[in-house]
Amino acid sequence: MTKSAALETLEQVMTQALAMANTDRSAVRAVCLAVSGVNHPSDQQRMLDWIRDLFPGHAKFYVENDAVAALASGTMGKLHGCVLIAGTGSIAYGVTEDGKVARAAGAGPVLGDWGSGYGIAAQALTAVIKAYDGRGPHTNLTREILRKLELSSPDELIGWTYADPSWARIAALVPVVVSSADDGDEVANKILHDSVQELADSVVAVVRRLTLCGEGHGKDKFPLVLVGGVLEGNKKWNISGEVVRCISKVFPGVHPIRPEVEPAIGAALLAWSHHRKGLKLENGS
Image (cartoon, rainbow, N blue to C red; front, side):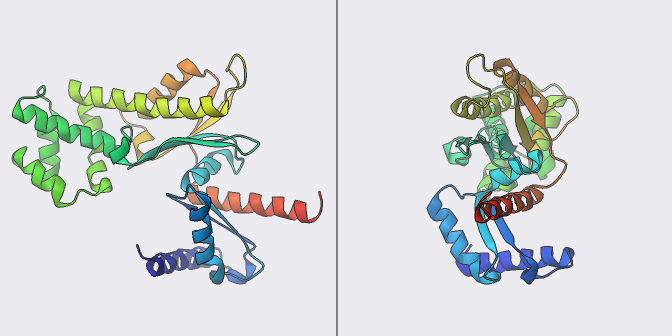
């Protein structure tokens, strides 16, 4: 997306949000943009430079990674704990009370986000091709994926995949993998078990680096916010429950939270929190 297109999109969604709140830009005191891929101060500065002209001079601006807003949506704005996002992509992101941060995964499918929706579905497509050409075991994923995509042969999967290899298009096959696992398919079950371990390993790495579990015995309680379509409840296969179970073997103090509000609300809570801190500093309190 070009700079002008991004600015236009930002302006549109902000205008819509203000209209829904029955207010206008003059009333805005703080803005928090939570954006995927913002991982460096230079990324933040670029976003800040883009939006300053959209609001009056007295407004304060803050830019965060979208994982921070997802965390805040589960902790009601308090930045402490870990968030696991598993949708089309995946990332584990943690923050300590004194502001230290750490992340694991989130590097995209080429660099191995295998617990993500894309990773799960890509493994399923690979399993179908391997079964077809004799390199892998038979799997009911073949029948179910072909039915879902209205294809007649695994040969056609190659053309379908590369016609538009967008991450979200591939990740949309995750429900087929879950339903096949629910029905007892061994290949689908292995894919999900491996993905659960990948997601759990990401959280464990972040918690360990930030010592969110406490010093010494490592059993202190800490929040783990769970966000994303892959972690939503299913029939027999409860992916989020299995992830938490794996993590609790290492860190029994893990406290899973499934947010009742959207990450956008988390961004608003962050804006409010930043604004309050700024006011306290200005007032010397």
